[in-house]
View 1 (tube, rainbow, N blue to C red):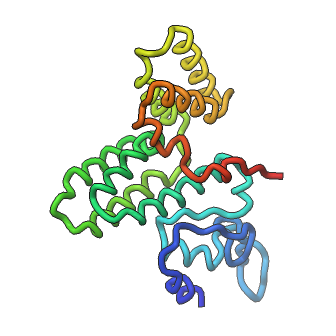
View 2: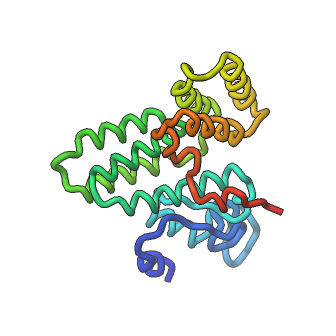
View 3: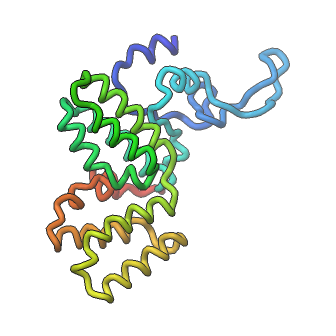
Length: 228
C-alpha cells in the first residue's frame, strides 16, 4: 500500500517523518534479525521512509526529532519553500529571476553547483522550458542537500559585504570583519551578520541584495519558532 499511496500524492515539496518509527524513521528504526527469533541487530530507515526515498530521492526529508535543532529546521524550511517558489515559475525569465534571488544562498551551499546552474540557464534559450526547469530543480536540490558549511557561508557574507565597502566607515568595516571572524569560530550566530547586512542594503538602496532569499528564505513567522 505504501508505493501506491506515495505515487498518488502528486506534487509534494518534502516530508516530515516520525523518528524511531518502524515505518517512518529515516535512520533510527530498529532492525531485527528475523520475525521469528527477534533480536535487534542494528538501526536503519523504516519501510515508508525507504519507499519515499526511492520515489522522491531528491526531496527534503527530516524526522520530527531532528527538527528541534534550529539549524536543521532552518535548512529544511529553506529547501521546501525554495522548491515551492521554484515550481511556481512559469517561464525562463522567471527562472533567471529565481536564480538571481537565490544566488547568495546557493553560494553558501555549493559554489561549483551554483556556477553549473548559471550555465544551465545561459544555455537554455530555445529549449523546452519544462525540461529546463526540471533540470534546474534537480540541480538546486542537489546543491542544497547538505547543511551549509561555515567557510562557504562566510564567503557568501563577505561577497555581500563587498557591495558596501566604499560607503562604510573604517570602524563599520572593522566591526563586520570582527563579527565574521567570530561567526567562523561559531561565537556569533548567522542572524547577527544577516541583520547587519540587510540594514546596510536598505541604507544604501542595494535592491539586488534586499531581494536575496538568504535574508528571508521562508516566511518570517516561522523564523521565530522556538523549541521547548
